[in-house]
Image 1 (cartoon, one colour):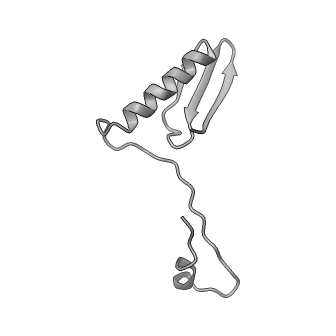
Image 2 (cartoon, rainbow, N blue to C red):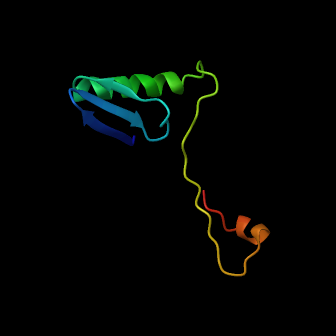
Image 3 (cartoon, one colour):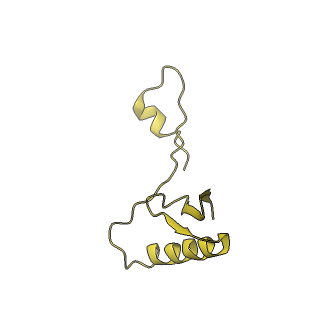
Length: 76
């Protein structure tokens, strides 16, 4: 699973790639990873309402193509 992390003074801060609104911080990298796994389990459990996701949408487009035509070329 993709995640982003950085060190800010004496804390490691991070978030999961799909759930960027849910940040966590810990003193060690190992603790940060554990927190990220806990966040993932909680957010995918179905017990948290209105979970925000981050995703990527890839759309193929060519010059002169209408919006309706482009929808047939969308790749998920």
